[in-house]
Amino acid sequence: MQGATAAERQQFESQGFFTRERVFSQQEIAELREAAEHVHSQVLEAADRDEGSAIDQVDVQKYQEVLGSTIKWEWREDLRAIRSMEPTYHLDARLERLIDDPRVWEPCADLIGTRELSLFSDKLNVKRPGGAPFPWHQEGPYWAHGAEDLERVITLLVYLDDASEDNGCLWVIPGTHRHGALKTFDDRGTLGRLYTDVDRLDEKPYPVALPAGSVLWFHRDIVHGSKSNRSEDHRRAYLLAYQPAGLHQWRNGVQRDVATSAGA
Image 1 (tube, rainbow, N blue to C red):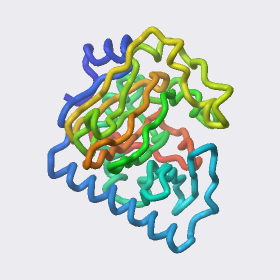
Image 2: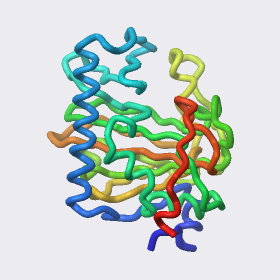
Image 3: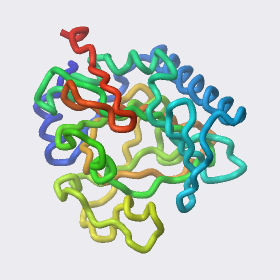
């Protein structure tokens, strides 16, 4: 099973997401973890050599351009770690190979309605022990500036570690994608305009706690976020977003079509 089933399509339409457990083997996930740490160490070393841009602080968050990627640093000064980096695949061939894996792109192709795809975005999320939460938000309003076909962007998350409520797993609010772009905050700094005011919603949050190797597919407008990592375990995940072929990536304007013939 690789393409989206009828039940998965129905859940995506009604709830805004669906999941599959243990899509990747333990050996495959071990290799992807190595890739994630390789990328992480490359960025840290380059930043230590002052090869990145000046750090741009927006509210409490710190951003920096390093090795062709936008780096979001952890909030805490004593935690030398990256929260996320986007794009990422150009820094490790193992991550780039994943883009062409039919186990991740075929369900997206079914949902988008075309077998010919290109990459919209890729991002590595890293939540170390003590890592900060990420507020409720939607991808759609954030991606609207620069997307060439936003209505046909489908996102997925590959779980590189077991994700639990303790280590800051992703939470979603099922059904909220049906509302479109929701009200954000005008009084919480610059970034508040990207965070969703969930007090206006009737739907209830749901923790998407899954074992390593699992995959979550979700709609760009489903409200989602995460809590802090209260455990001693890492919570790493790799995000991929697909769109119809021939379009350009959101962050860098590069066209990276998917080798879909490999899954034919």
